[in-house]
Structure formats: C-alpha cells, structure tokens
Image (cartoon, rainbow, N blue to C red; front, side, top):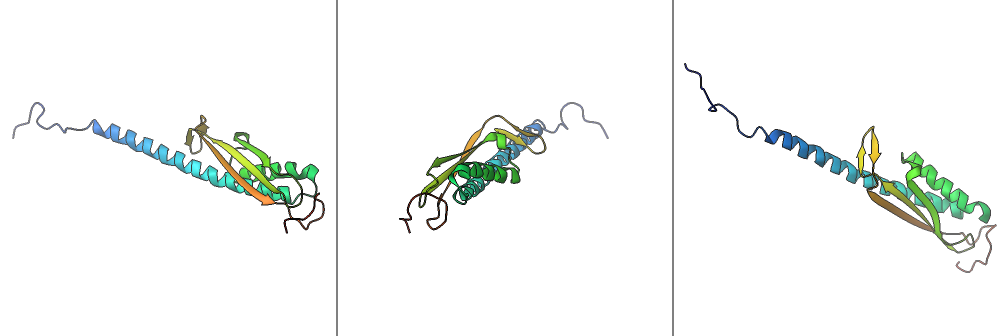
Length: 148
C-alpha cells in the first residue's frame, strides 16, 4: 500500500464551517433582539394600563399623576425592565368626571441584548398608550356626570 502525496486526500470547503457558525450566531442575536422588542412592548402596554387605572382611581387630583407614574414604573420593574430607560407621562385628560385620561409609556430597547450581560445602544423606541375614563359616579372628582 502506498501513501498519497499532495492534495489528493484534502477535504474541500473547510473554510465554510467558521462562516456557518458566524451566520448562526448572528441569526440567534437577531431573534433574541426581536423577542426583546416584543417583550418590552408587552411590558409597556401593561405599565400604561396599570398607570391609567391608578390615575382614575386616585383619591384626588393632587396625587393622581404621581400614583399613575408610580404604578407604571412598578409594573415595569415587576416585569424585569430598567425604569431608567423608560418615560411615563399623562398625555391627555384631567382628573374630572367623565374625562378620558391617556397615559403613555415609552421605553428605549438596546440595540444588542445578551442574556446575563445586558444591553448596549439605543436601538428601538417602544411606545404604548392606554386610556380610561374617570368614573362619573365616584366622590372626589370635579365636574358633572354628563357622560352617563
């Protein structure tokens, strides 16, 4: 039996393996980032809903906005989100009977998010709004109950 000399036994295409691994890693990062955006949208929607509910259920006009912002931030924290990346504000309405109050929660999603490490950059800006009507029959709010 004789040994082959030269390139006769060489396997071609070995350089494609690192390229395939690179494509796989980039694909996993893209899917992870897309899921992060979806998860943040769900968290922002829940925070806006809880904040609007806290606003319309407040005891008085003086504490309504503070309660709304605190409830929205508490919901974001409960869902594992960094409150420093969020903005919570009442964009429409007032604490009066039959008034529609709209609360908006904005959140900046990092460009790259890695598990156990965190995120870098400002990639997507997620925004959620929720509106509720101040109860016309409750005690406390000003105005007449003309919507009922």
